[in-house]
Length: 265
Image 1 (cartoon, rainbow, N blue to C red):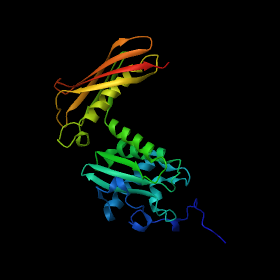
Image 2 (image 1 turned 90 degrees about the horizontal axis):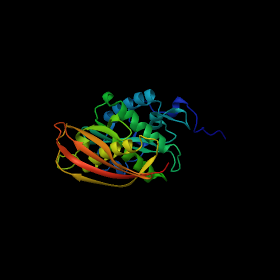
Image 3 (image 1 turned 60 degrees about the vertical axis):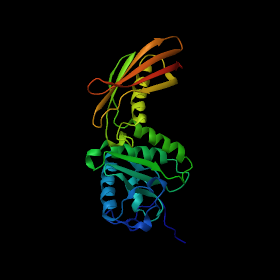
Image 4 (image 1 turned 30 degrees about the vertical axis):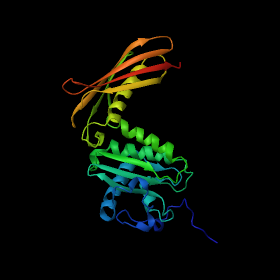
């Protein structure tokens, strides 16, 4: 008996990019339950953009040897691929369901997709595309933790770096705000922690954090650029102490961060 190979590329096995075939798409997962899920032409349009971005950034499924966007069209794997939903008009959620719960590429593919969508954001209508792997994957918690970290660092730009000092900048956009319309503490903490980590590791020793604390002093305005300046305050053979001042565009101190590191080598 002749069985179709799951690794084949016969065009008859694939839907067209301009088709929306719900039966050949994964079910909506928990990451999208409170989002405005894209269907019909809206799904097709964004997925066509996805195909172009993935081609440009070489986001490929190594098992099947094709652009990852093609997995949505592969009728042999009707429960695998991406589904999309708008969190807000400027923020999109994308949930990836792999072909099996043991797919070893899921981490790499989700990170590559995140970087393609957000690294080429001028090619679509969203300031941020958030990505998660479906909970059916055995390492979903770890993979999604890494993706949350990528989100938190999205938009952070490094400035000057010396052995004892580093700066980083973040322009506050809508996805950095909390329910009160002010910067989320986690966004400011991530900015400070980035500057802290760069300053602490700019010398010859590798350093890891022992403890950190943050004091939030003033509310910054959306659209403002926050600068984090990390400075070493004390240095010994095995530990170092750093402070990070976060200031807005007017120079107002909006938060202060303090961190200690242990030198591992």
